[in-house]
Image 1 (cartoon, rainbow, N blue to C red):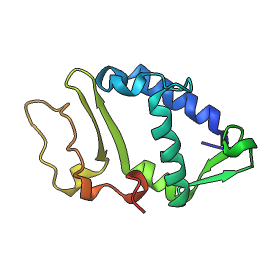
Image 2: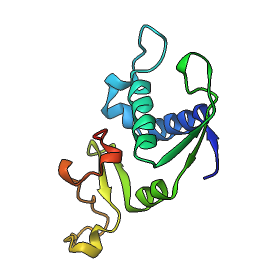
Image 3: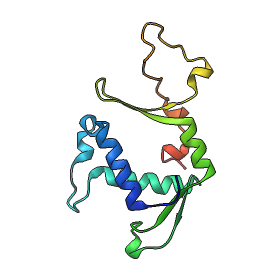
Length: 136
């Protein structure tokens, strides 16, 4: 992933979440605010700021009135490591949306031998890196 504008990243995230049915589970996040944006946009903006504060993203450029629209964002080495270690599990049929650690099978995760396509184990709140929680 090279350098993208905030608008491009927001559009990608919106398409990704919609195509996987996340807003079917969290329909309250898909409603419009009085300002004409989706409620989830606020969480998305907070996540970008948090990732930048934890040095997972570099944000370049200045835009009018404090908006990040038009700013260029790139992923740092620390951000790439986070993406390689963690992923978002989305299962609309079972109403699952949560973070999991990609390499958990190497750490003794017990797999279900009857169903080899089982859901990964969700991270407990204390296991989620601060860059992904909003805690500084």
